[in-house]
Structure formats: structure tokens, C-alpha cells
Image (cartoon, rainbow, N blue to C red; front, side, top):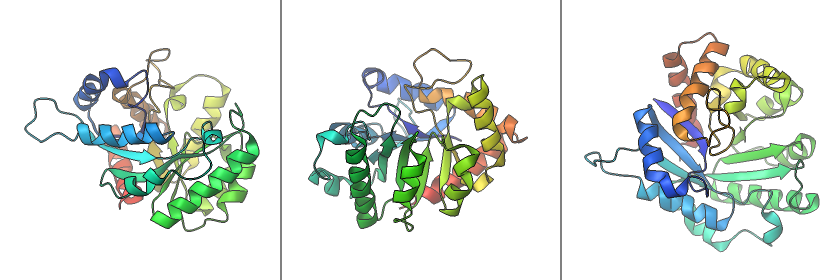
Length: 263
């Protein structure tokens, strides 16, 4: 069983072909995935799609079991004053398994940093209030993120597309955080070599894999629109890096996924 812990089927690039994309995912061994929200509309659509593609076992169109997460991405927080009221209803939905993706992004700074930090705190408080794990988007902002997260030690944390390097890995693990790795694990270049070094050192019980589709397609699909079916290439490279069979890695990821997202 392959699991994609972070995908954007609700993106402009994928939503129009969602059924066929999920059918291909199923054909390539993907049996579970999480559709991630980045603002209110995006989160509503993530939940809607998770239900739409929860088809009965005898359905002609087989797709993976779909779940959803809801959150306001740091790029979008400048458009919000507080947590949308709709979120309090959505977290009661059986398909919603996490708050995210939320966090800080200092690479693009599409929202002012002070607003990012304020809304990050608000969303962490919300996750605590509704007792949900958190999917984090932290880019070039690990120092500030760790300072904020230290005030929320009871939360289950998943560092999506982990980019803290060895420098922050011990701190992340001390907080009980999991790290998700995607297409960059398969790329060439110094940054990916360093990422693979991190991946080899992280404890097995602290890893998940993801596509982050439609972005970050893995080798040999680099340059194409990413989709959940491509996670098989990430599993293959990840297994190679840890001297495991793909089947052994599948079992590890499945256990980690179920433990982290269990409601």
C-alpha cells in the first residue's frame, strides 16, 4: 500500500481531471491520500472531494481512500482576520484528519511576516482547541517557527516538505515531530543530496512520504504536472536510501500514517 500524505487534487491543475488522476493513483498502488486545504474555499473543496471519491467497494471507478485537511496557508493569511467559522463545522467531518497546511513562508513573503506569525499562532490554538494534528508549511523560517511551536508542545506536528536540514532535525524530533519527504528526495543537486542525508538519519517512525502534487514532480517525471501516482518513484528512492525493500518501507509508512492521523 502506497500513501500520499499531502496532495492538492483541489488545485487548478488537477481538479478538472480528479477522477482519472485518482483512478491512476489506485492503479499504481496508492490506497490512501490526504487532500490539503490552503484557504477557506480550498479547504471546503478538499472535504467535498474527499467525500465525492469515497466510492463504494463495488464502484466501477476505483480510487484511493481520500481524507482532507483544512487550513490557511501562510501565503493567504493576509486575507483573514481570524479563523473562519466554517472550520469549526468542518473539523467534525469524518473526512477531516488535520489542520493544515499552516505555518510560515519567508521565501516569497506573500503575506507580511508579522501577520504570518500572528495567524500561525491563531491556527495552532485552533488545532489545540479541536484536538487535531497539524500539517506544517515552514520555508526559510525555522527559527521563528520553532519559537512559536515551543508554546504548543501538546500538538502532533508534521513538517510537510521538511526543509530544516540537520541543523533543526534534533529540535524537531525532540518535539515529537514527523517529517514528510517528496519529489526533492529524487532530484539531483547539492540541496537534494543534503535532504537525502537528513532522510537517512531520521528515525523510521518519524517519516512520511508525499507528492505535494501538482508541484515537485519526482524523477523521472521531473518537469511534468505531478500527481499521486508518481509517489511510487519517491517510495523507490526512499527505500534505496534506507537499504529497505519498497514493501518494508510501505509497512513503516502505513504505521506512521495511521498513528499520526488517527482521530
